Amino acid sequence: MIEVGLGGRLDATNVVTPMVSIITRIDFDHENYLGHSLREIAGEKAGIFKAQVPVVFAPQPPEARDVLLEKAKELRCPVVETSRAFRVESEAVEHGCVRAVVEEIASGKVFSIEPKLAGRFQLQNALNAVGAARILQNRSYRISDENIAGGIATMEWPGRLERLQTRPDVYLDGAHNPGAARELARFLEENFAGRKVYLIFGAMRDKALDEVTGMLFPHAQEVIFTQPATPRAVSARQLAEMAGDHAKEFTVIEDAEQALESALAKAGPEDAVFITGSLYLVGELRHAWKARRKVASR
Image (cartoon, rainbow, N blue to C red):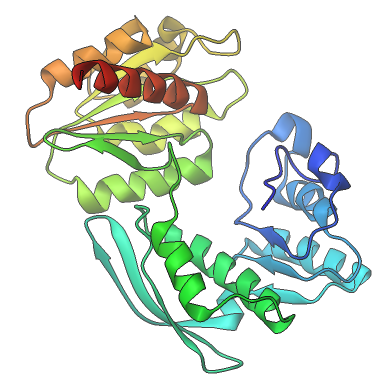
């Protein structure tokens, strides 16, 4: 599997001719490079399509879907839209993880989907994977239905609603654009309502800060503004000036590791700490956390 870095049409990965192309839900991100409308962004994403190579895509906003279908028709790509190819027979959430039974409409095949990754949106990601695997199965690749279910059940995604510990819960989530922030806000609402949440937040200069912080900050008891160690980051003090109005309470701690220590010192066993806003921040504190745990275990 090869993941596109930015957009698709001009990304370096576009030299590859894949067996299947997959498009996750399109939302606003990297507008300075990809365009300022969903039609423009979808056009860049559809740049990965290759003539007659099947494409799988998640439910899309209408304007993005139209672009994807037009490009697929132009290149004669077989299309699997997961919202039309699969029917969800039952769905539940356990400890933040979705559990579902889905039927492939064309064949009547039933799949039990149980990702260990947290968040309702992981059901759609799983359906993208099922759709791609079914295409490969139909092309005689040796992939069993058990392989599909097992792959989904064991999939790991560092930094995406990744829980590092309990009591208090500590999560990493690189929600750096409106779509990801929307999913994190939903996760907080469904799983942490009534609990104190301490949000450690850092961001890059090219992100939709007002929209992201407007969705996330109302769910936090306190926001701790910080900054990852990269020149692209907005300084913690600038963040506070730009987005502090969205927070019930906030503090500014420029050093990211000190920000984490401060949150952990404040959080009680039933509270939660979320590190978010930037993949750079998530990566830096994930590395620091693993190093700290390694030292503690000696």
